[in-house]
Image (cartoon, rainbow, N blue to C red; front, side):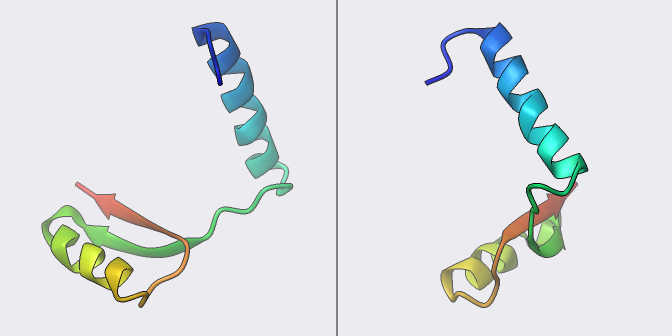
Length: 57
């Protein structure tokens, strides 16, 4: 558990550093406009996507 805001900041900075240095890769399974959130959810439920789905307002 992360008990303090300072520790949260430290840990999140580490994660973002790993992403920047490509030690950690984030897979995007798709980008959907917010208006298509229902379709994004349906695609997740049907396992038509892998990785994270991004909803763009």
